[in-house]
Image 1: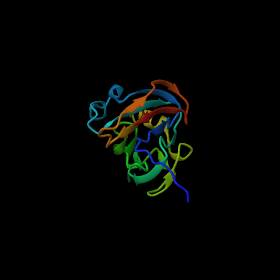
Image 2: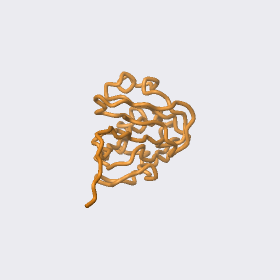
Image 3: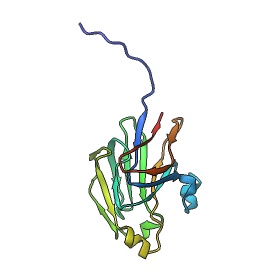
Length: 158
């Protein structure tokens, strides 16, 4: 007979940089809805490339029809919104090529979308890539700011 001890401990969730660039607190973005944390807490990255990967290990819950945002969920039901740029919903999908669909299992090695950063610039849209936690509740979010490479572990949710 195999016996084991089970401890009631919180599992931490690792967070990864979805793109290379400069990671900043969400409060630094130019859109007040995001900066005020009305959508949830999180962070933003000023990207050096347009290749956006998953910031967590989990499942795709939604791909917005306008391709400017992707919903993800961890096994522990933490919900994450990856929002691509500011006011990019107005582009109606132009400038985005999505590689995932609802119910896909993803990791930090899964490319979610290619963003045409030059197109965003031509449309005068800020290109901040935001990772927003919409149901943190009593969880604690920690992350490191500064230069990051895609796939770097940048923080945790406890």
